[in-house]
Amino acid sequence: MNILRSQICSVLRRPLYRQLTTTARPFVPPAQLVFHDNLYVPGAKELDDSTVEALVGETNEQEPEDDEEDPNDDRDKPHPDSPNFYTGRSSYYDNIVELQNAISRTRGTLQRLHLLPLPDFARKSLQPMPTVWKTPEEMTTDFETNMTISRYRRVTTLLNELNEYLRIATTAGYADVADRIGSIISIFESGKKEAFLSRGIRKPVLLDQHGRSYTFGKRKTSAARVWMIPVKSSTHETISDVNVEEVFGLSNEHKRSPVNVTVSTILVNNIPIAEYFPQPVDRERIVRPLKVAGVLGKYNVFTIVRGGGTTGQSGAIAHGIAKGIFAHEPETGLVLKRAKLLRRDPRMVERKKTGLAKARKRYTWVKR
Image 1 (spheres, one colour):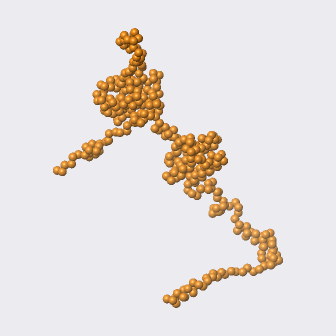
Image 2: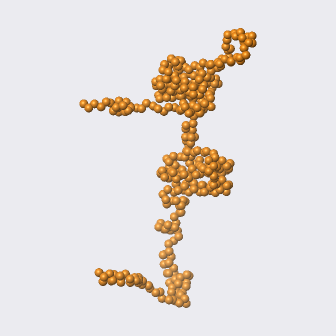
Image 3: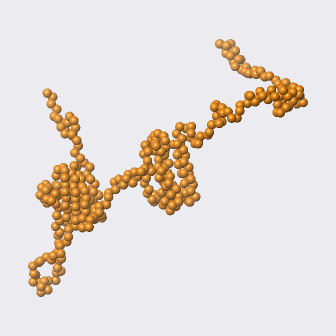
């Protein structure tokens, strides 16, 4: 083993040289070079005219003409318009580069205007400008590529940063900068922006010429239409018994002003509430919004209710009454919201399941 190892090491230590066979060109003195119209023949004497013409003809045959285009020559192909041509998604990356350039230019402009970096307290006081971007399906058409979740997230991240700069420019009062940023953002905004942002915003209830409000309430499968109108205060004077001490001025006590208690009417399907809802629980549910707002006896209520049972109908009427009170007296909105009267109760009856007696109830298990 030692002998083989020593032989192998000796072979590995030997330098390996590659013997290159080179052919040395013979040296030709410049005096022996014969030039004739840019053609020379080393080591030759003066050539006659016939030999020169033959050499020129062979040279012209070997050189390709300029008019003929070589299909394998890549130098004649036009250069692509986009540097991202060979990525397979040139339109997507071109838009990404344009957004990054717009962000860079906007950041530099805001820095020159001393609006960046912005402190935290100033950033919290910026004007809110919510926006809704296009869906991935819509951006797939614009970017001409399949908009995956990662690509869509990358685009929206850049757009959110640009929208933040728009808030800064708008709050600072630089309209020209804000217009340029807005022109870029509007390209990627969804056409359903207004409808999306208006979700959850309750439309204001308008009063008619008689001071009457019209609202709509729901509960379970019941729906109620509610009209509310303020009760007109009575102007007639109350007749009281004659007091002899007051007539002769013998009493030093001050006369108390009479308290006029207005009586309101609540009609359900043109029937008084006491007749339509015999259960006190249903009547208390209807009157609860009036008690919470402190306007009991201040409004006359007329309702038309359809569908469901007594519980659902009373809840629908209460929902409509609460919305009507908020229309007449907006200052009671906070109290009604805390009592959860302005919000529709989303609880519904759970559907019956197959193989069960009801939604959750099972049949009695019998062994035999």
